[in-house]
Image (cartoon, one colour):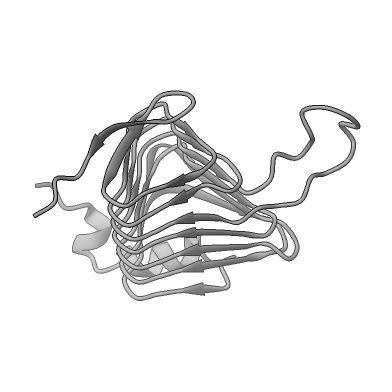
Length: 180
């Protein structure tokens, strides 16, 4: 395994903290490879040992005024992913977001009616130990329960039970965890 020069020199966490300086709080030992764009007037809270792997493409965190993005301990977020919060988006401990994932708690305009009105935000929750495949889209109201797994390219807008693998657009159950 190759160790980046910054880590060998002991500069990794220091540079990561500099890249995450717009966050409200950053836990111990953050890792940032590449660019992380942090926008908005809301709060971004980053837990311990969080890894932002943006070597292939930048990662974007956008918390609007009054919005909150919570990234708990030991989470890995890969390049090109985007998290947008007007109310609250939570990514649970030990979860993993693949490349080009999009998480948003507001659709920004209704499908029908006045497209200039902004709909109510619905919190988005990813519980602990969840794996989200690349190019997946988690829409407002999504709640991925503990240990769920999302196949690549899946679109979700509802509650997914624990230990279930879902896939498709719209999401459907592909496999259930075997009870032990």
